Length: 317
Image 1 (cartoon, rainbow, N blue to C red):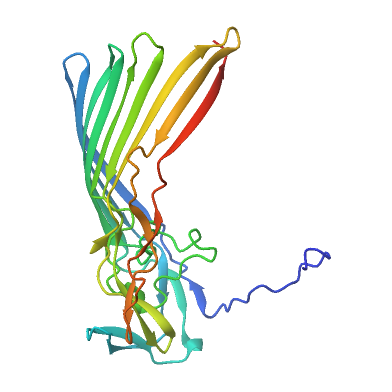
Image 2 (cartoon, helix red, strand yellow):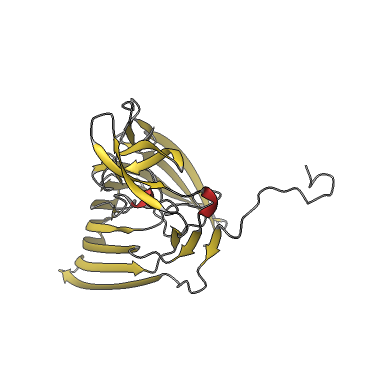
C-alpha cells in the first residue's frame, strides 16, 4: 500500500550480493548463420526452390553454482530404477549463483526447405512447402515443460523472475537434446481461386507440423530441494501429437463508390476440427514412492472449429 499513501519504501525482496554474482568478463551470445538455395522456373507460371539453412549459436548466458559442494548419490524410484542425483553437502549460505557463459551451452539448427509456387493465372494461384529440420543444444530454457518457450536467456519472460536453470547441477541431467521449438516435419499448402461469374474468391491454408518435444521427469528429495525435478530422458524422447490445421475463407470485394472498397470475409478455422493436445498436466512420471496418475495427461488443446465473419473498409481508390 506504500504507493497509495505516497510512501515508496515498502521492501519487496532482499538480494544478497554475495549469493548472486555476475561474471565481469561475460561475453555476448553469438549466432552464425548461412544458407544456400536454388530457384528454378518451370514454364511460365511455375517456380520451384530448395534451400539449406544452418544456424549455430554459442556464448549463451546461464547460471552456475560456484559455491555449493555436491556429491553424487543414488536414488531408487518407484519402478526400481536407480538414478544418480547431486546432493549439496554444505550450507545454503555457501551457495554462489554465478551468471556467466556456462561451458557447453549451444544451439545448432539444420533445415532443408523445398517449395513450389504456381503464380496467379486463369483465376487461381497456389504455394506449397516442406521443411525438414532439427534443432538441438543446451540453453537456459532446455528443462522447460512440453509447452515451454524456447529461450536462450535467464531474464523474463517466461517467468516474472526469470529462469533459475543451472543453479542446481541436477538441472543439467539429460538437458541437452532437442530444443523446445524442434519440429522435424512442417508441410504447408496455400491457394486461392476465383469462383466464376460470382465475384467471390475461395482460399485455403493447410498446415501439418510435428508436435513439440518433451521428456519424462521424476521428483526426488535432496537436501537442497525436497521436491527436485530431474529429467529421466533427453527432450525429444516423447512428443505432443502432430497437428493438421485447415483454414478456409470465402471473400468478396464490393466497390463503395468514392469511399473505397469493402471486403467481406467468411472464415472457417480449423475446418478438420483438429483436437491435438498443446500441453500436458505434468511430465513428472513418478517419485521414489509412487507413480504419478497425471503424467502425460493433456490439459490444453488446439482451438476447435469455429466460424468468423469479418468486414474491412479500404479507403481510397
